[in-house]
Image 1 (cartoon, helix red, strand yellow):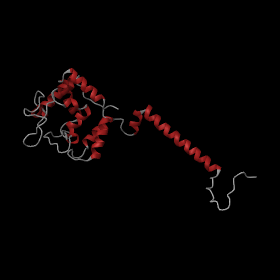
Image 2: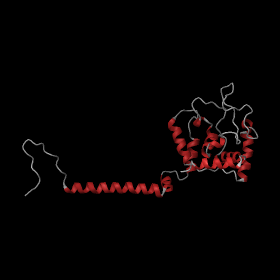
Image 3: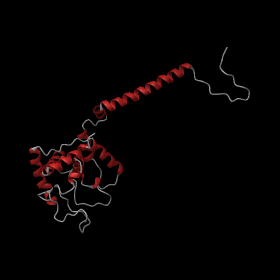
Image 4: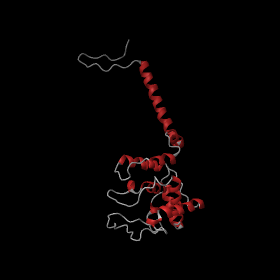
Amino acid sequence: MSTRPQNKPGDRPGPERPPRSRRRWRLVAGAAGCAAVIAVGAVLVLAPDRVRAVLGLDGGHAAAGHVVRSFPDPASPDAAARAALYAALAEMPSELDPADPAKVAEGGRLYATYCAACHGPDLGGAPDWDWRTPRPSGRMAAPPHDATGHTWHHPDQHLFALTALGPGPFAPPGYQSDMPGFRDRLSDDQIWAILSFIKSRWPVPVREAHDRLSAGMAR
């Protein structure tokens, strides 16, 4: 005899329980879903490099370089494009090496050709540089790249993008500069060489402070 309670007259019938086989499959599906979530979490924790490979980010440098070189108009306020750029730079390993004599020598030659006219042959910046006051044109003068400037306040990856694109993607609205982007004139290796030369000229404490800042970009 069934022990299931019977509805009294006037009671609203309750929902009918699904068959036992359907309940069993729901439990199996739920367990499988939980197992999948746990497996994905384990991969993310234990094998982040494998995840990057699956997502096509195993060559972080190449992925970031592509984003930098395909970035739209650097003066554009496109927030989505900037977010994609910052995310790519966070995956980008640095090739800046002030201890590599060959790279520093090449960077010195390139700096003399492309940078010295504005930033000074001694990295001292434009003679009229003043971070508080723009020129009569409304544009800021070229800042120094030595230890007196703010170049070392930016991580390696941002310096790379600043050189490739100009300051547009990193500057506040309304900021104007004569600094062009060099992505069409310099290769990635040449940009890293110039940055290596610049950093080689900084005092050791400044270089160490910049190392710590750049290490914070790594994931």
